[in-house]
Length: 475
Ligand code: NAD
Image 1 (cartoon, rainbow, N blue to C red):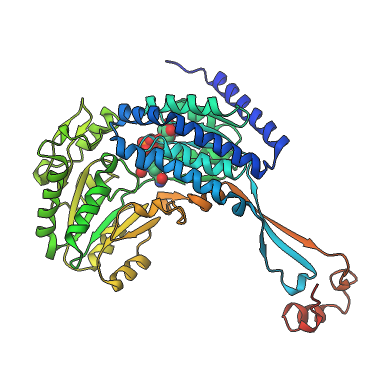
Image 2: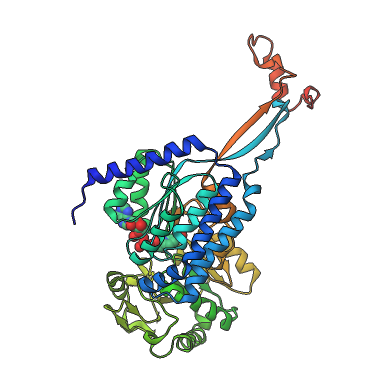
């Protein structure tokens, strides 16, 4: 189907203009208004939760448990947390004012940015669309939200839900593919929040740069999972299999590959293989707990990364059914295809190390700073060494993925894995401008700063060198 670009641009321009007028007329939305809107969203999600869970099952074969845990329940929890804390987050933050500016008071006001654009990916199509929306509305913005075209059923439910809940001048959900995003990106937004691949993140940032629009980029990368010889093998295996197979490996923070101490590799892999078979059965295609890859082309992409000679469990693929069995590949080297890109599927490559220095060498040889890193060890010294050495968006020690479930921790990447962060108060901050406000008193007006400057320089030097405390007049 050919797209009329001029019509598309005009249509989006009108949508943005509608929101800009509404924003300008109402800024700043009051606490009461924002809470009301968040409650409306909460009600809408609650009313539509069955439809959302069913749609997630249709598009990704997501098990109901996972759909609730990582999507519907996740955003409902984020909404409750935001509603509970919003009054505190909105309160101007008092900061100290140095003596040379007295008498005065200083505050930081979190002020809204304006009209925001949120672009969502396919893998957690509900939470990665609604979670930034919650933060944007809490911070007092208006929003246009673009869902992922790869999960069309979810996209349809979200679009009708959002557009039935909010007026278009406040929040509007749009559907579309590359052409639509391209047209959207030619509009002037006040902030763009993009979640997706590093490759598309670059396109978004280039388009945003033309209008000098600030961006938050939540991207991907190869997140390493380091397993040291002193780890609790049973617990590590359970947590790694869970982190890898959740959403069939289509999780931006999934452990991408394993770096394991040669000393425990055999025992670890035996336990790992057993765990996978225990959880998903000899034929995982019949398991109700394993989802499907989002599309046939993504299934094909992942299948090309699998080297059958290195597979120790799994390896079964059915492209038409978008099925890939939970798979582990042993004796992987950095030159293998699977180490050239983010796996984003249920395939775990294993690389072993003999000397600990090899761990950092491997991570450094891969192009991006990963979105996450995982370290399994009981040694506090190793935990502390790797925490300070590894450049990653976030880190979990003796655990996988769960750091992103704590709303008190900022979630975001570094380097090629992203720019900016959100969740909880960090999301509110992400969609706010930290406005500096200095309020001066008028009962004193020091003449020192004003011309004529003659004979004042030595006094100024004393004053600014903090040696003139006797001049400090407390209000
Ligand atoms: P994607 O980059 O292909 O698509 C994301 C969005 O960009 C979609 O809405 C799509 O319509 C749009 N898009 C795609 N191609 C475009 C183009 N050429 N121009 C303009 N817009 C375009 O990502 P995806 O495949 O949906 O998601 C998987 C990727 O997202 C993985 O790399 C994963 O690591 C990353 N991801 C990151 C996070 C995070 O929070 N950091 C979360 C989920 C996924």
